[in-house]
Image (cartoon, rainbow, N blue to C red):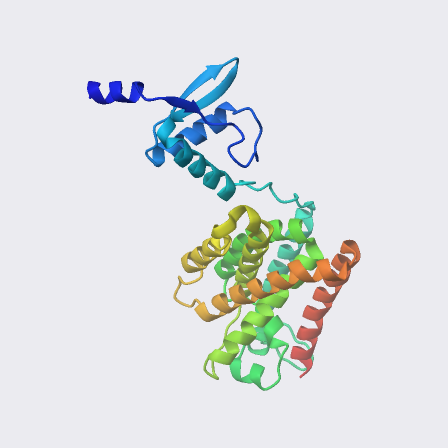
Length: 314
């Protein structure tokens, strides 16, 4: 061991120029870069040592390893140029938690209404679940409103509370990113498309109710929006947000005796598709954000009211 050390010490050492051969970097080696370069050379089994000269750090390598050392460092710096990339422009978040809470309150109130014996439009009483559930055969024969009405129905208080609790986590974030009107329209659309896709693959007598299709649509939306927003920082790991969302879908969307796995999956996939549209379309059209949010909020509310009105009178 002593002979090897003596042999290394007797080698002729030459300094590695701070600019390397391409002159791409500053002419002073920072302590951080010195440490990085040292690790790079050690990984390639190239002997090196550092020394502080006139308050500046200098890296030395043996004369016979000079060319190899410079080549390795040039290759490393070229591959890692501008890495890590600067973070994306921070999104302007909108504080609208109150509006999200009020919407969940309305959903809870409507659940209580569906539990009452109410006479409307010739129904004595109204069988809300029968009129509004996502019945595959009826949807495919033109009763489109069931795609919407099914999202507002719940089978039990536990079903309602679980969807509100889980949906609240994602909707608060989504509304802050997109604005309340746009976020709720996207989630409503994801839930409706999810129910439609589910109807296409299910048996004719399949029925389902619940907002969970829309909840997992919100999961897909958030995953896609984050993936696109941070794609430069994630580089080859860009699918990570989607992978995390898929893990959440597998964890929360497949358990339970009466769980409609198809509805959850298709709601999630619809959310991904709508997330792509929501990120690219406004950039192309340059629509004013506030007007769009108000318009979509009003349209979403009217869509639900019209869907239930048709369900009651048909």
